[in-house]
Image (cartoon, rainbow, N blue to C red; front, side):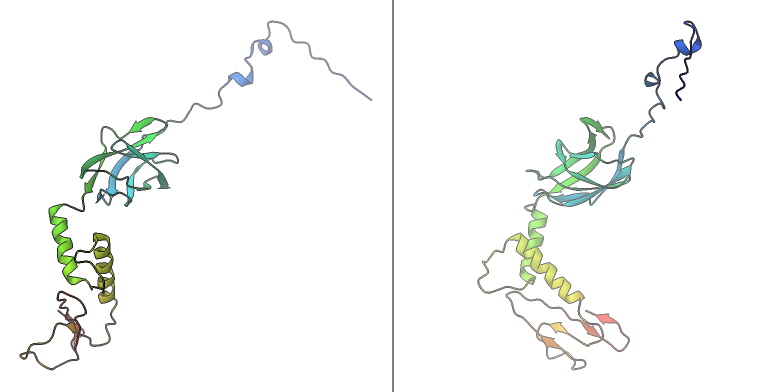
Length: 211
């Protein structure tokens, strides 16, 4: 059995004058808060670039990019308040403004973050490397002046070794003892490289460490 139902609508009725549903917006677009930068950690790095930096702020979203000066860099969204980036290289040291960009629109231009590029060849840093080179272990075949990357690596290895020493054993790493020094405690001396490293690590009965 088949039943056909016909509905007649007058020409000037409300149903005829109603706009199609496709022309009606469901909801107005929600206002999007403007992203802003509050801090950069760390706020300085080498001119060679490649330093991992966290941009801290508000209203971050996926696809938002970070701009160092005029250099757009790839960024990784951690949360709506943090973005991880790697700094691009820069040929001269100095301060650059850090802003945000999304689809060719820039944010934070009125209140940008700031990042300081530091050169490995600055006098104070160069002097620090010279001091480190006198302390780190030297290996057979080393040139007189080591590359700065090697100096940093060996200094980090040495510091890690010293800090990881067991505290429950009495241990002294020092230069040769003078005749006036007492004989209490156990000590051993080493000097396996050019330049003198004098580190004395001793533990007394009270569990305190003395240099």
